[in-house]
Image 1: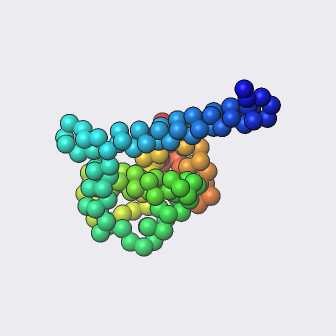
Image 2: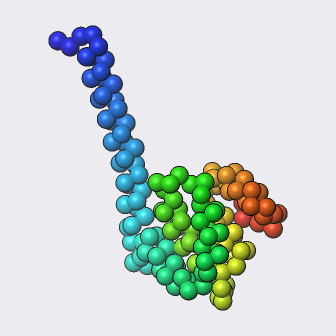
Length: 142
């Protein structure tokens, strides 16, 4: 029979493992859903890659640095995924608008659209730090 501190250690360890598996499973399942093909035969990840590849020539070093600056508040572990998603949305906008080059306006609009609503507070703070007026983009925050 288990008694004393060892019993408590075992109970803690069981709950810790269950919690870890649940968190890991949640994120793996989300990634799995994003990689599932839609009706058009392409997944969300495929479309992100497509838009990034089609608009890669429109980016210059200054704009890439600006995007890097915008994604700095994202934890480093998730930053590459966030950057890919945001660049994909910016690329989608650029293709829809037949842009000849990336502009600050295009990058900001794509970033706002690609960012989940729950993170808009952090986005506004970052734009304020960079001294960018958010009034022209208020309709995108809705």
